[in-house]
Image 1 (cartoon, rainbow over the protein chains, first blue to last red):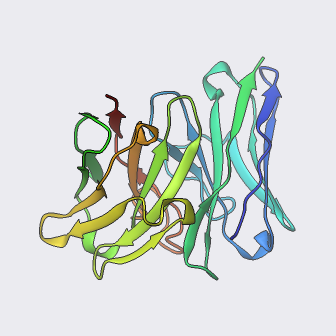
Image 2: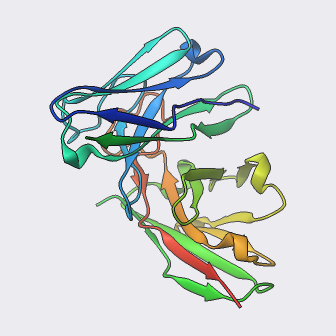
Image 3: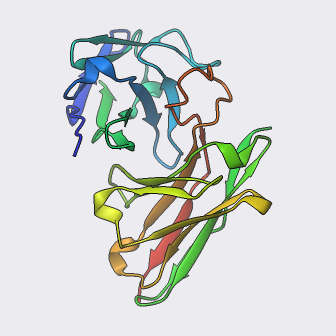
Length: 108
Length: 125
């Protein structure tokens, strides 16, 4: 079945840019969505369709894709950005929704 | 306001059955997918599958096939997640989500923008 691969953890210094990657076969032809989840809270959509932001999400969150790897960038990182981040696609071949394993972002 | 409201916390014993709910408000519940996700204590999010309330098209992720049952009652805009025989390993927070386009463009409908608050299920003897 389809798999999305994320690094388990990413560290970033305050004020710098955290980059979280998501790799998958034929990802170039799929729409990638990104969620953040803080402890005790439901996931929150922060980027959809590769690079669009829902209303209310700061411009510091941006999405991009190159070939079969998508990247979520969180610029000007702050302590409040510490969370688990998940990528997600809808695999049209199987009809299934697929999530990556998640990346824990730590702001050092 | 568009929202999904889940049923309250449950404490069950191994071997018991359980059905938790997810009720949609403020949108056309019938014509958008509902997904379910599991999160065990201290662990990551695991996607369980999806159901389309209009025709009950159901797609379970392989790990959950045969372990749980999804259903929906269109008349009351409510989706359900059910277990026939609970195990201690089912202890987790369960979330529902919908791909209704509340804060986002309705172009692709591939993202889950609205999530329930979660239902904590504890299975212990």
